[in-house]
Amino acid sequence: MAKDNKNWRAKLHEIIYEADTPAGKLFDLIILIVILASIVLVMLESVDSIGTKYFDFLNISEWIITILFTIEYLARIVSVKKPSKYIFSFYGIIDLLSTIPKYLSLIFLGTHSLVALRALRLMRVFRILKLTRFIGESTSFVRALKKSRAKIVVFLSFVLILCIILGTVMYLIESDKDSGFTSIPRSVYWAIVTLTTVGYGDIAPITPLGQFIASLIMILGYGIIAVPTGIVSSEMTKVERDKIPNNTTSCTNCTEEYHRDDAEFCHKCGHKLNDE
Image 1 (spheres, rainbow, N blue to C red):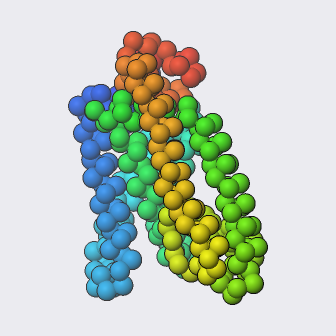
Image 2: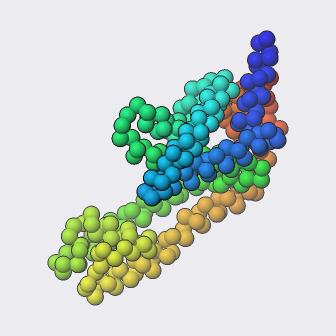
């Protein structure tokens, strides 16, 4: 009896957490469709004319989707040996936050604003990206980001310091000209907007020197935008060169994913994979 229960949990875990089997691929595909449908409902509900006219339909549809996500959430908890590993994981928290708003609406009034939390379901698409040919690509991108995070942090720190310096300079030049540079923080805000080539236009220099500096910042912005892309691209090239084949096998003990094809034990907790 205990063995049957163990095999049942292992089979459920294989379907929910892995995408290498036909059942796992079908499960991920269904969840992906439900996620996209729920996001469409959230957007339609935010339109007053549609939300009022089709309130009953939208409400019933949302309840059906919420119940499906609740069943999936409970199934994920049941299928792992240490439920707390999933419950307090990033995706576990996202799954919970994107499910509870509908239940809270039954208990508390005025919780309609929590409808925005349902949009968090869209983040679950990243979990589905492990499906078929996206497995290696998504893993390579994540590894490249991790390896380049130190360089990116240094680069962003440099940009922040540059914006503070440029903002301070513009404040000294434009503060007496009634051009909107009323304080250093506001001038730094202008420098960030200009350097990123956003250009809202709510603040603009009017002195020749200020306009000259603004022109240099705009040109500099185009070069700065390309730097993070180059850093990540360089790391992705290295990752692709040293790429190790992996699959979607998920550890039943700690839910860690992306193990090597020849792995017998989890690279995070050491638990035996495919333990039945």
